[in-house]
Length: 263
Image (cartoon, rainbow, N blue to C red):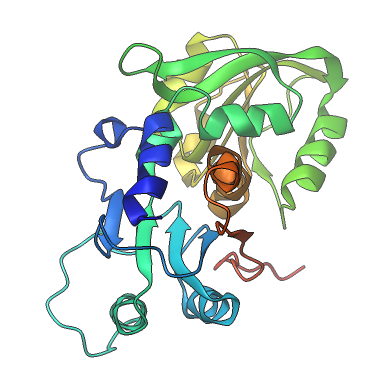
């Protein structure tokens, strides 16, 4: 089984052509024609703890949502966590692959998965890019739910340490817009779709003025909104075990939110 056998499966679902120009999705460390040594570990980010876990499990490949390299590296001397992790991966012959904005914008990608988790039906793309693809989703709940009850459901489902939100100006929620990760650029699109609430992450202070009584803006946290990438990638790759008898797929137990909350 080669690295290409695995990446081809991912890219059939989320083609690299869908990634944004600033992104660095794809194979970052390793060669496509190399034989996979051991299993595959799925995580949100490449960290020292995730590499330790891969070594312990005997995994020869780590697939993450976030690319570990966004900017060119000038040296490999362990001066930063990025340099150190890339250096460790090379030393231990661990391939690193990222499925980022292409997984965000793929049909039935990240926002679709989060919508399913929160019970949203009748979803459509919030901001289309090419046919069938785009960022975010908008849909409806099976029936209206009390606003604070829906907040509690979001918090429990996503494991949020806290939820930041604009003024609660309605008693119930029915129409929901979602964008995993940093979605402030689509506040206008969510408003145009007549949503009761827009769920996303990485909002800034002034963003919370923008709803202006039309909907509720809800920041659940970047990591919390994108942890679903692990289960989504697992589902994409799971049937490879029917083709390759020695294929082992693991969900990381050590992928952690770098942001902490004092409660």
